[in-house]
Image (cartoon, one colour):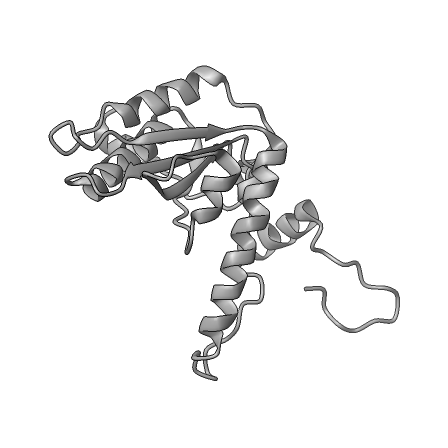
Length: 202
């Protein structure tokens, strides 16, 4: 697989399957991050890999609390013509993904932000190479990660990268309207109509 094939292979995953991910794949992804360029070797990043279900749940709940407050605060300035999305703040992928890779930079060091983002790019490319799906989630406010993961204050969490196999791959290739129906059935969002009801399921 050449470099451009790896780039094109990227999947920004919204829903993850519960298929186990071999630990050696995660090890190679973290190694790729550690080998990225940094600010004259003065901006060593910190990578935290989370697989504990309780930790992942704590992260999701804290993240959704922050994002919900931000979303509804921003909604006050939304034009009336712009449709609202009441589920935009929900992030089940933070709990579904087998692994969360938290990327932290040494705040205050030279070139620390650029070094952190270079490492993040390596993580996404390595994830593609390993045949896994991921997404880059940058928290609106990430101070809760210091508490949940015991991250030293000198490191600033920049992004959370959920890593795993995409649940989308479980769906067959069908027409868009049929795909929506299958996904609704799979995720439990489909509501069967009772006899005599005319309202379409959402």
